[in-house]
Image (cartoon, rainbow, N blue to C red; front, side, top):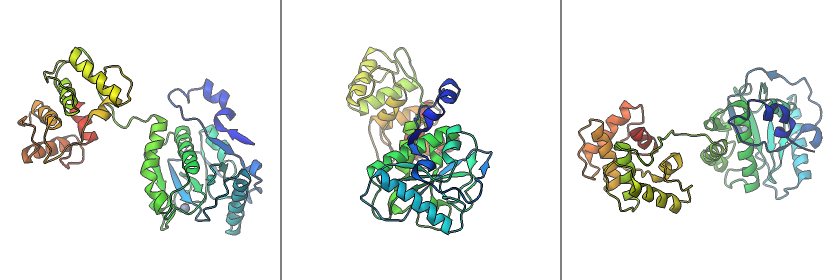
Length: 340
Ligand SMILES: [Zn+2]
């Protein structure tokens, strides 16, 4: 039997507060009874505090081509037996994902507690982290090959749901090796963790940066930045700091070309697509945008479109003043701070 956490707690979740700003649906999770778990050897401990992180493992077993449900059951039973053999009270991890893309409960009560969104089942998967981290075992060995897409897709879904239930940031997804001396979860899966965090963030609708809305009728330095960036993107537009019909039309054309929703308003998605990372040695309108912002902020920067030593120094001063990494490179964080 496949159980969906959302369906299990539907009365509480849908009628309650938790779904107010959260949207990640639970993946189907196969509970212990369904895959034929043995009872735990001792009562399961549920600590009161919610977990604060997720830790990713690989089982370091065979990269089987058997993606069947029956194989997934067998995998869960084999892990539990191996963990009994180590003297543990139950499976050490909270959840397991098979190479065929089945998600299974590991330690008893993990699904019940996750669905409630309160408390944490004490695990046995990472020394020093078992009271604060949800452990996910991924079937296979990922030292030199990446996991199958079916497994990865379920991993994104499961992590997003765990983050949602416990208010954990996508930034708090780690690999086992981040805490213990181990190769787990393998070089390839470990290298995928930034992508996993990014995919989970997208699923959660996390806004990493807060951008201002700029629209028709606005005027000033922000509008000038939009106009410079549109020109750098190929628009034919005068930079006058006035958001009129010509600027709106250029924004619409840019949005359409990028597959964004076409509303003529520069918001988060448009800003993220519009900005161009720029650094010393660059030239052009994106550099003028940076220089004009710095000049407006009193740095005395000349707006000549050439990113030289003086512009770099002013960028670094601005970054220091804003608590950003002072590397002189205008990337997304610095752009966001410049137009904030
Ligand atoms: Zn591990």
